[in-house]
Image 1 (cartoon, rainbow, N blue to C red):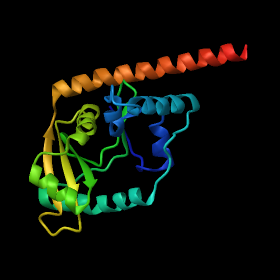
Image 2: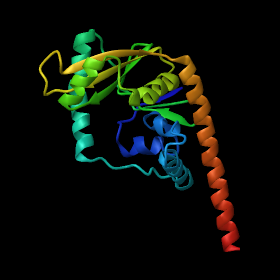
Image 3: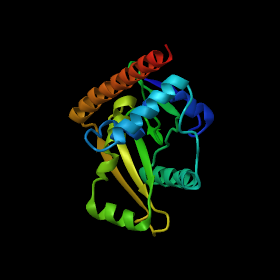
Length: 208
């Protein structure tokens, strides 16, 4: 793996992940038979590959608030776990065009994913235990690309009083899931290449 020291959300960060399948979108990669989700993401990666320009380069108010809240969540995590975390920009796989942008790394074996949520979601997450299944592809993808052993899921809801404002659940590697994710991601990237070849062929015939 290769770790890039870039500010997440910066133009350089967007450019560095351009044309890559990213961990935050692995749920779309796995979304076979679920409408247009996978196809929409395939088109985005294809467009980035052809243009060399990132499609997603914007940041709205909600995203900015989330980034601001991550700072407080990281500090609280460090206090609770008595650790110092390492912030990184981007992690690239050595052989496959996939990338992950962890919220932080811990030592040589761990990492973390912060989700800022509204109080009602926080209460249900705590009551249910574990962590929401919609984040599994991203977290296991982070474990795969970073070659780490565990990942702490942190649900952060600052409007709630302590200890309800922060919920931490440790996720370990699911090797079977990661193996399937790797296989499906390779297939997805192959489909991107095939789509590009097909579109170029059609365009060349149309212009001849």
